[in-house]
Image 1 (spheres, rainbow, N blue to C red):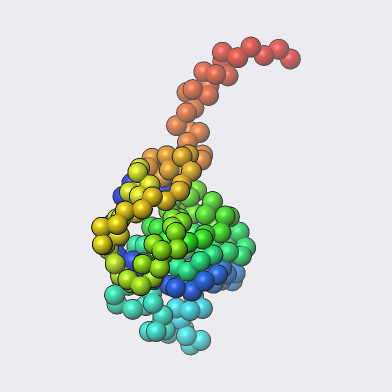
Image 2 (spheres, one colour; image 1 turned 30 degrees about the horizontal axis):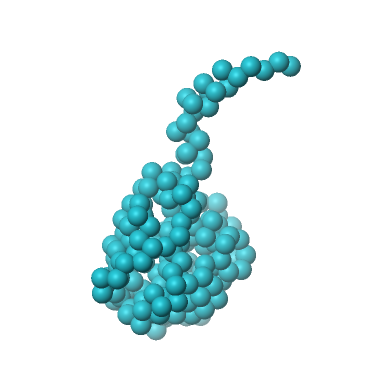
Amino acid sequence: MNPVTRIQSRTVVMANTDIDTDQIIPARYLTTTTREGLGKHLFNDWRYRADGSLNDDFILNKPDSAGCQVLVAGRNFGCGSSREHAPWALIDFGIAAVISSEIADIFRSNALKNGLLPIVVDENTLNWLLDHPYAEVVIDVADSTLTLADGTTVNYPIDRFARYCLLEGIDQLGYLQKRQNEIRQFEENRSWTP
């Protein structure tokens, strides 16, 4: 996992509400245990026509969306089943952050554990973002701030431990591995009798 400290990108807007994890990555693509390659199936049933050709009307297939690392979505993003493949697919596609006024708890947890930044903002901020597709935003992870193209800066909530892991580019296991010496020393200094 790479450290996530600052994201500066244009936004791609999907105003739909209640985008669930089966829409993000359909169940038929959950047979893999690796993250690589899932990006090609991101929003598969919306991105492709029945014959397998690209749906030119879908937002992620439009030329202006190329290179956008921030997805702005309607309320209740990531609802549905708890599949970890959903954040994997977003990351593999090139999305670094998702912004909405509501993000499902399990999706948010899975996202943070995998280096995808889920940002919950108030309705006014979300409405501004929805009304300004492809706006340039700056996300500062250390300060937990989102700066809009008009200069407005808003704070977003993020768990301290999750923020630390993002900034360090580690997951929970990496956090423990970085502290192996401290853990070993604690165990050695601990008196234990069987």
